Length: 285
Image 1: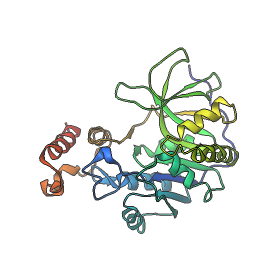
Image 2: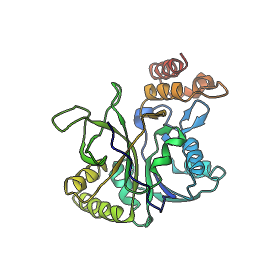
Image 3: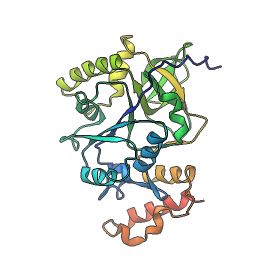
Image 4: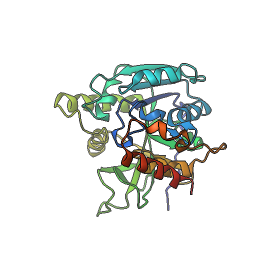
């Protein structure tokens, strides 16, 4: 049985930080000429879905850490920001660093509670409702196809450990991290301090979850779990993931990306093109 939810604090989060610097190499050829966040899930991009979700949930400011094809992101957001004020931080080492470096790049531009989110997530906008208050982490029950970082929770519904895999051990039931966090100012300052230590040590290719893991071990960071199981969400890293996401988020007008025609893939070799087309067709089955 899940523990009862804590009462909401008074101050809610209205700033979001989007990490969108990566090259999205596992999603090639779709990311060859377009950043990962502009990948279409049916006829709407990941980024446009996020912007709609943030506006719907009353966010006012969005900071985007860019890198790969950053001009595409800037041009896209010029006319699609809605009520959001958009600010950018460019990560010049995006080709040789991981998301820990992208998060570190935002250390000077954010000084308020904020929502941290990755640029490869699609989700039902209502799932953000419980993430609008500081020091929370989005998690979900494990599924056979999920991989990556996991957490365990205690009786108070807070995270007691981070893990780099999904294997259950003596630590208790594992839950998948959704890669959406909300942080208070005090927690953010603790994160920055630890980020500085990692970067100074040359650990620019780590995941920022390692920072969170260490702070949880030190008992200086407390994150309340928010479950994302009751509505659809998906993390898109590969063309197979994209196929699954299209199945979860069907379009009102049926126009998945494979209808763009084979000329769209003219710069790719035939085996990859075939794989992409098959993956998207599978999403419609």
